[in-house]
Image (cartoon, rainbow, N blue to C red; front, side, top):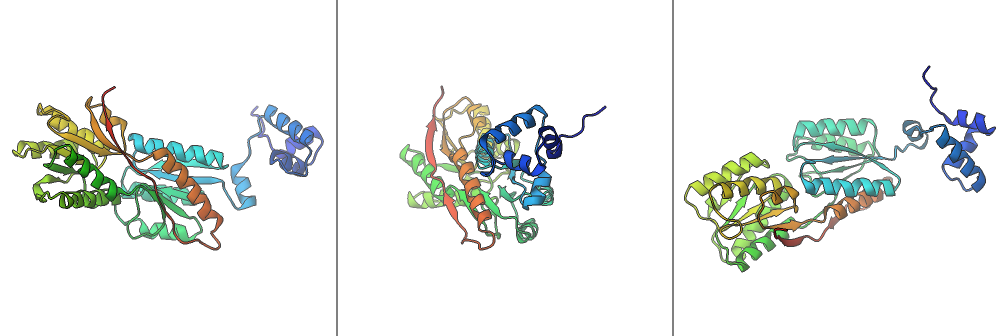
Length: 337
């Protein structure tokens, strides 16, 4: 026979108490003695009791669950940000439900519909490029589920956020290149979507202008956020006869694909071409060469995103003005260990 589910009533019957007393003891209520709390928790543990989250949410009108949407867990920046999120959630008494949108609008739509149907108390989102889901985002927000964007802003949908200053950090990368004698600088990646790519491209253009480097359209090598596409686009550029001496990559997958194209043509990194990327991603280290990276403190970003979302949730009835927290980026030259 299957064991019956352990309920508050079964624990109460065993201890000769009321279910209300058991509930209060498990919640560390101040009107229950320490001895009773210890006894109840010990017996509940022996009996294999697990709280019914859905029942608790119905009673308290709060699920103590936060939804988290992440683009790609293969990338170490995102996995570290998610680690910061779920550890902070646990510390603050919440559980995190992690879902990946794979930078795809339709997948993200299903993510959002699922999370809102639970329902979660709030959503942390690193949105897929585009604005197709903005109507759904607004509808969910109007149901009383607040959002906080982390890493990427959401085009045409205003919400509080935790990001770095992508434009300023791209400018600093260009400055670093120039200080190290590099002036034939390629921008590799998308230039308009997602928001981080657009801002990084702006920083690149601003850097060229600041240091008196004329913008040559051929140095903008637009590609998707995919290893193979970055490899193909960088390869075409190199085979065209152009001779870059530095490449600013939007992210880790692009840097890995672009870096492979450079090495496949018997060029050296960093001697011939200095490679830079955003995210301090482990995948780039697989190239086995030194590279420049913008460390975005993803763990701290995840922590602060949770704190900001809980603050938004606490003021749902009287919303605060939107807040945009900027995490300081760090420019690092990664050498071989």
